[in-house]
Image 1: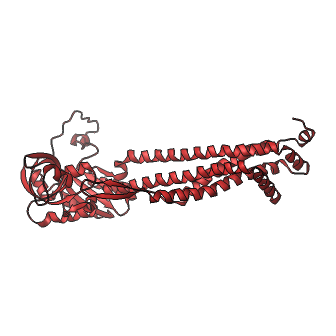
Image 2: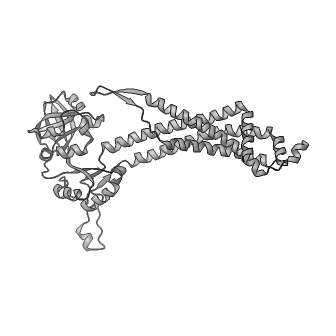
Image 3: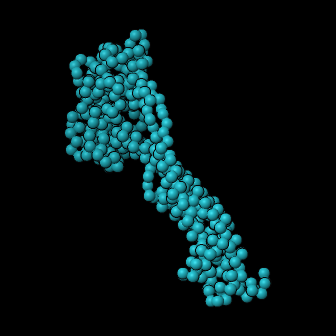
Length: 415
């Protein structure tokens, strides 16, 4: 085997320019594959972190997945009911204390109950539609991502006495209001009440910053004429991956529709899987192109060293030895390119980590942002694996051809 290695090194060094080009091709493929994988994985991780942090891991609403069974269906096996019109019922979950106690008995996380209703906020002759969210300040602060987005005030400000409201900064701008301003809130039921703005938040999401307002739960119940009722329960788990199991158990015990964050974002998660498939397909294509360079140089060496091959076979080298010789040459080029590609990939990732750009926010000034990168050894392993696989295939095809050469025909000059 040592002799085969020495012969392989001699062949490779004998064609220095082509060797450099082949190794450079593999290195470029490996380096850019690592950089692309790092950038895409970093973007995905950043997106998933924001997705998990900004929304409840499990959400329970006052809806039901299927219509309630009618008494006749329970009594008569052949009963079939069609076209039944259910009565209007806006009350929501009427026993929040009982449901909350049931959930807290097994949920490994934090729970917040709220009542959502629609309304209009008025100030200085301007009317803006708003989603009114009645909350318990302490519970909401432990669950909602808005707790970290306050510009002024906090959820605790709602409990300061009187009718208070927290709104987004863009909603305040549209109304021409500010902290301490008293605005009029009119619910969809026609109830009207004055609220003092005690907090402003900015999430960066226009729909929330322009269309959400938080009040105490009892105030929302009064505005919507639904005393002692809620219609939304949000759960933050210690382990977000446990959301499907918790959701199944919660729905089985409460009877209300319960959605884990994976189900709520199913289409987005499927899109991420497709994006990963595309990414690794591109990586494979890059390595395939680099493999053609290795195939070209090994084929050229095989053609030029035909007499050397004949002499080696006449000295007792077998077909297997010839295959191993040229396969080793291909793998050597792949290894050299992979090693250089690792250095190039690390350098590209480091260079991208230094890149920064600025995003201007409406009310938060200017924020420095860097490219999201994921530093993982698996990116290097996968890129090198693709490179060695292409190099092995590119080296094996000429090696098989070299092994089949007849030394007698070559030495006699036969074609």
